[in-house]
Length: 181
Image (cartoon, rainbow, N blue to C red; front, side, top):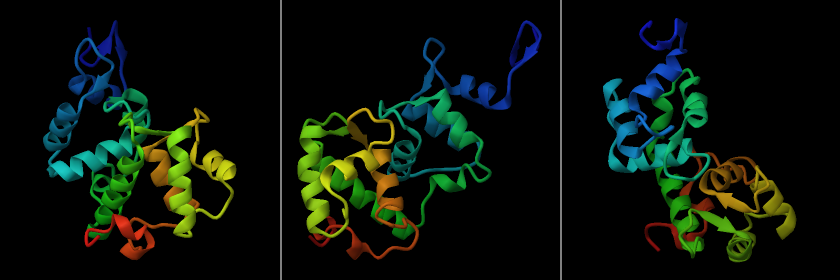
């Protein structure tokens, strides 16, 4: 058998790296194994940076990194640099996370249809949501599963609400979410 391959077939480097950190019986990489992967490649993430990186990579919202999620990240040219937002971006993502958790009342990791009503009214009152509730939900819910993941929420803030996590002033997010209260 050829290293990294099965029966003479060579696996792509992304699969070899993924398999090295995935638990043998599982098809995902855990939070701790991802931290090891990053560290083994010469990067160190603080706990806060690690949590933010996992939220960016974990499209399914299950708390682990599936191969498809890993592959999308691995294919990026500056894959490790993109795990660490600048200081302002980190603040904004942290604030967005606080808002998301505030409205995720059942702590499922998603904003469902029931929870979305309160989210929509807050975003509308702050002038961030410009469309009606149904259109805003449809725009946020990329996979049409009738619930909003954290990643979908962030993508919507970046695109529909034109929020840049690199340069936007903190005041753009709802005032209740700022550190000063």
